[in-house]
Image (cartoon, rainbow, N blue to C red; front, side):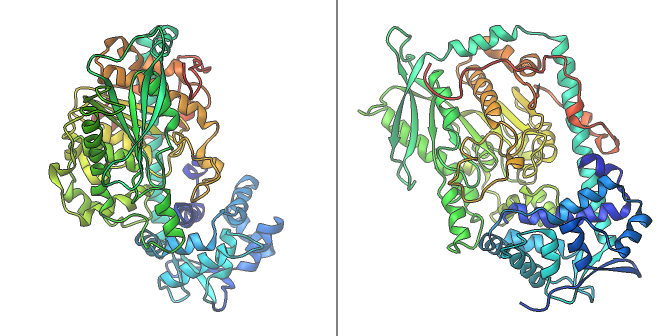
Length: 582
């Protein structure tokens, strides 16, 4: 799709912008006369295409004489024609209730307004109600399903008009963003590959070092935290007979903050692994942004994806958890003197990544939020729709930080507009940032790679997972009890492989940053990451990256990131199993 984008003619760029805009609205979730014609306009010029012709093409692959003429004029190849047919006919597995609920939220209305710049009524007016109705009716079609051609058919005016000039402008912006991201991926991968080749390590010995730390079994203890409706799950290392005992000061503690729609079990695979390595882990559930919140939205019990105040509550949920564990650690209880609350880390994914960064003292960038919000176009960065909610809260200053947090490990974090360069520059604890090149929710370049260059902390690392998606690290994303089913292509192949990377590198990272064990420093180098990774998920790790090295990226036209050179073997090292005791 990326190569198709880079060579697209204006008509195809328009088609792509329309497709990304509309399907982006659907993927984020989410009667009158039906339209009979699709009117494509370019200034004073316009062409009318019967929607029945498009439906016939989507269903059978046959082109009417009019479509045949357009194909010849636009020089559309067989391959490109097949791509257009797939766009028209591929259904999105969303229920009409889910679509309707999302399209009435603040984010849904904003997306409809942005799409309305391109998709209009025959009299050149944006009509949010008409577009919303078409989307809901298409989702409710029991036969054809929620497809683009069904959206065209159910648009409730006699015709649907597409403004080519507006669509082309959006397509050019999206195309530029994708090219910029590809160039950034290549830049990171090239630097990491060069450093790996110049500074080799004994990868097998380092993996054995990480595995040798897993000397504990795990006690699972439910902890009631005042202020949280659900108990926190504590994974406490348990000393095995004949093994080393509890450290004199207790075990370091890591708190895991899930992303939007997650649960306290979303990262049990990682919690178990860290606990067997001597790192206590607490997983909590944020009631305002967990799976139950999404269920409430879909059932009509909530009118928002999340409430604004959730940006304030999430970090405070973590602090409340630390307060309770600290109290139990100092009083008669099953965990007395088994935790070291002077050595606390936080793991967060997506919205949880924001949570972790806020706990380190990153303040809101009010000026940056005012500039970026609301997004003026169909953004290639859907996470801005969530970040912009924080603009109404004002700056909480240092009110969200917790000085007990000494290290953070964030996966697909959001915060580019919310924190900005100033906020990221206030973080003075070690940070590991994990990004995926196939993340379409919090895209790697604007949300992780560029913000990484704003960090001023002495120890910070960027881990780029080639072909990693926004959902690759989530342990329960493929289970059947999710509020919204994520298509397999958005999850990615074999996410368990990515989980194993998070386990090995997460344990090495916290051994170094919380315990100060310098033996693990070589495990956080480009050479070890390259050796650990393997197809389809190659790894690139950097400890330094400057904004100057990214300055000219928009002007570059690189090859796809997956073709970048890698001096290490494609076959990954074999970590221990994802979960379980040593």
